Image 1 (tube, rainbow, N blue to C red):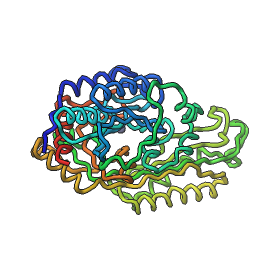
Image 2 (image 1 turned 30 degrees about the vertical axis):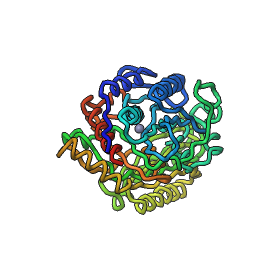
Image 3 (image 1 turned 120 degrees about the horizontal axis):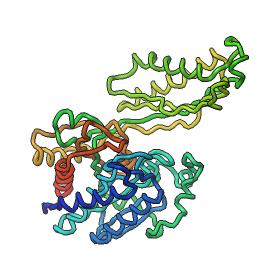
Image 4 (image 1 turned 180 degrees about the horizontal axis):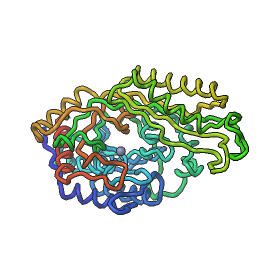
Length: 401
Ligand SMILES: [Zn+2]
């Protein structure tokens, strides 16, 4: 086994540079296909080229850096787009880590390693857009019709000139396995004083878009008993969901009504309809199924009881995913060697591109601590020593694969 010697200063300098694209305070605003995001990918492509990697872009916009030669090789990466208000490490860390390990391996005569930055992980169009299409979980034509909140389609966003090579197909068969390193985005490692998490599985996510339709009317003249008010229905729904989930969930299960849009959203109008989303996450597919029944059944009952119209649209399901046991053990061995007693095996409560990639090849993940567990926020941060250690563990594991 040839050791892959990473260069910590170069790793951190590249991370700092990536942060300058769309930087806002200590965080970044770099959604997929924004000006800042396109500029960051041009820079990433330059860094790949300088490292001796061949740059390729697939039809949905994923950016690959490929080592010389044709044989199947390990792929390492994550995403470099951000939430509308994002931290500087979410995804960016995994992409720069992949770049550093691929680059250092070329320099040290180690195994051939490729790097990828998946497009639109953060969901300007839909969750994990780039890796969903690449892994065959969503047809490209369907993805191209997706729209962002402003009505722009993915196809339109893709058409703007980006200064990157023309799109080519990138068969998943070119790669033997996938590793992704990511900040934890939760408080477990930080609060335990540990430095590395070896991920065993990624939770599944279900979501549903619902609409209660009532009767829009005057808020002063319509007696309470004659109203069909969808916001009253929504309040009853959320309360009902909480009590019905009680006997079904574990302390690790989470659910969220995260988006609510009241129409027409005026203080003197009994609302005509309310659109809202419910999202629920758990590592057990059977539990997720039972929760789906509750989400739908409760909505139906309340709509009937309150004489409201009910529309269900936009159901989405991402199955829970297990990491490949042999890769988990390789990462665990490297973690024990470089951070003895300071690492743990753990699940991922956040979704990652790795979940999609697992449909095509063995996959595993590493976490480093997030200070105070904060992410999807400008406050997101990780100690620089932990950022370096994570990539050292990654490189050690990659060298032995
Ligand atoms: Zn991420």
